[in-house]
Length: 479
Ligand SMILES: *[C@@H]1O[C@H](CO)[C@@H](O)[C@H](O)[C@H]1NC(C)=O
Ligand SMILES: *[C@@H]1O[C@H](CO)[C@@H](O)[C@H](O)[C@H]1NC(C)=O
Ligand SMILES: *[C@@H]1O[C@H](CO)[C@@H](O)[C@H](O)[C@H]1NC(C)=O
Ligand SMILES: [Zn+2]
Image (cartoon, rainbow, N blue to C red; front, side, top):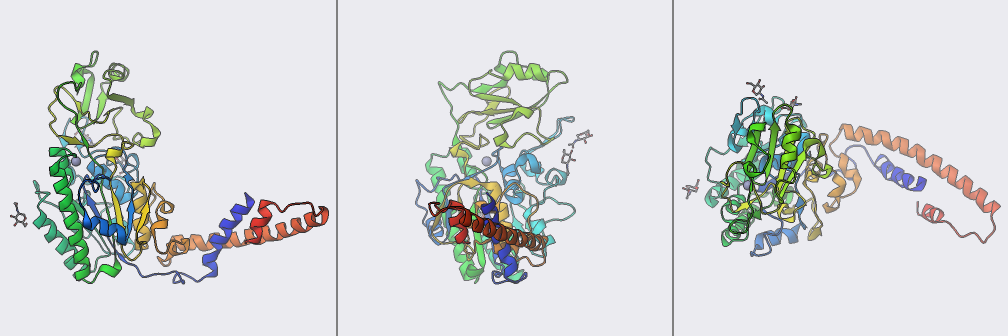
């Protein structure tokens, strides 16, 4: 154990032996384009030709899949991408804003403009980048319209109400604006870019349909267009591009033989016992029972339908990280794959849905990354999307806010994967902490070397030649 601690000491010591902030590992800061194609499931490239996504994988990194946070819906999971925090920690717990006293609800689009819904203690990466001297922009990305601690993302385009999210001509105009004007003329360092497909088509027709496959072809053409635009604007060798999504999609089961979940039909349950409810929104729901009726409502619903899961907030499985925030209501419901939760009548008609348990493979999005800082032709396993935020901060050379991810999960994707490069952000706090740690580490190494040398000498003297070198002693020679 002591030995492994000391290996760490040496690793920590190495930057101090190198040079200050502009050390041998300091590299130029490249620009970063972070793209989300809403609802692009990890395996959507398996039943469609995707030459541009395939070329991007050859030129960079492809993950088998990524795991979004629970609840697997758009605004919450995108805010996790922007902050590296689980949903219970960033507070954007649903696509819809609601007030349990007034019963008021706001849909996805209106909720984009409720500042204090988004600004709940976690800063999106744009604001952090701007505070550290970088220039950031965002086009249509969820969270773009809000103000965070009195700051907004400096360059932004918010979609109009009832925007047509699948017009390919418009997609290209947006790409041209980002490449030519934002990265080019305005010299931004970071841009987040959002496309509403293949989510829209996945909901409308279902994920296993020719329509969804056509939407994936449109995404693929757009990826080709983006990479071509980067080259034609002379950005290719200083632009990292990460492409992922917020969640996946699964087919909703309907028709004869499907026992639909309708809460009002469950014996012993009554909406009269509930002060506020958020249901009829895919496979998830939340309830606030009236005073004193929590136990009654819970007992009625628990076991009330074979495909319905019912949890008290405090009993939610820890792996879902969807429990501790005050906005999460006391009773949480979720349905098995293929089912949606209806209140009074089965009036949801989407053929595809998301919002299910994030363990379900159908809920997992894709991930691609390419650019000067990424290794080429690397396939990696699945990882949680909370880890994308620290990766982006590292690429931009900025100090991250507190988050739930770790650079250790993604560092191996990078050309300069050694820890030294982490601190090229100049006189950052991180650098000073590293120097301090290195000094301590240096002292520990010295102590260790003296002690082991001394004890080894003593052992050599005391023991006979029958002694085999221990594993520790063997490793020690490699120091
Ligand atoms: C909900 O509405 C009540 C009454 O207008 C108000 O006092 C409360 O602050 C509101 N809560 C939220 C979360 O907006
Ligand atoms: C986050 O929102 C909750 C509930 O809406 C509120 O009580 C809390 O003060 C907010 N926290 C911050 C840091 O804004
Ligand atoms: C698509 O967008 C372009 C550019 O904004 C617009 O000119 C065109 O009318 C749109 N097409 C449709 C079918 O709405
Ligand atoms: Zn959706």
